[in-house]
Image 1 (cartoon, rainbow, N blue to C red):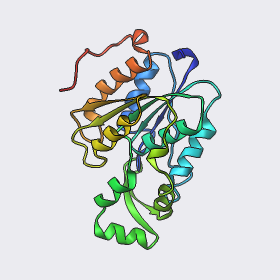
Image 2: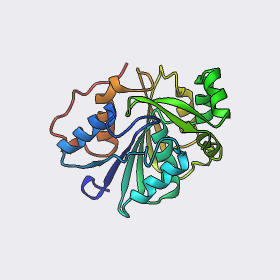
Image 3: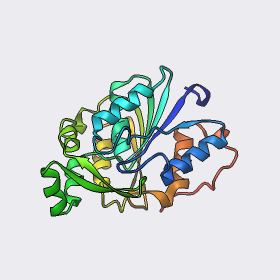
Image 4: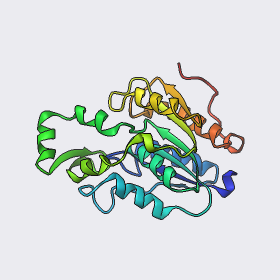
Length: 226
């Protein structure tokens, strides 16, 4: 698998979009190498009806038949993992603070009022791409309940990058994931869930694991995250 024959996708996180800080940064880094990074808008056709199943199917519909590398952030990382489980052209995964054990991690972060709203059928979340609160259907919860991380067993080369200070999705979820999968490797970063302050380190890791470093004309300094 070489960069010239591979298609690269970036899958943004929950209540985010194709113009998030990490998406734009990685798009520009790939573009500097002459590679188009595909960044689908996973909010379409609307945020209210968002489900993990819808995201998976949307990405699958956009895949070519040639080799693919999926880079996914948070819920986009969980989406990428499930697409790789189902689609053989996915040859590599780069998962940024992936939302493993999603409901166990996410639901306790909601306020009592938010949880009551969800049980009534919907609730509002601040959508960072839209910069305003948007409603989300309870179907989102019901849909995620059918997905179980222990079923992600297709041996796809996987690099996981996760912040040790993540208070949204604990780094322990990624540690548990890689323990059971010898094809997966975890890099622990001195950051939080957003990982926006370690974008250069993420790009370095992507270059290395995807065999891109030799083609990158603007290398950032080689350093380790402490």
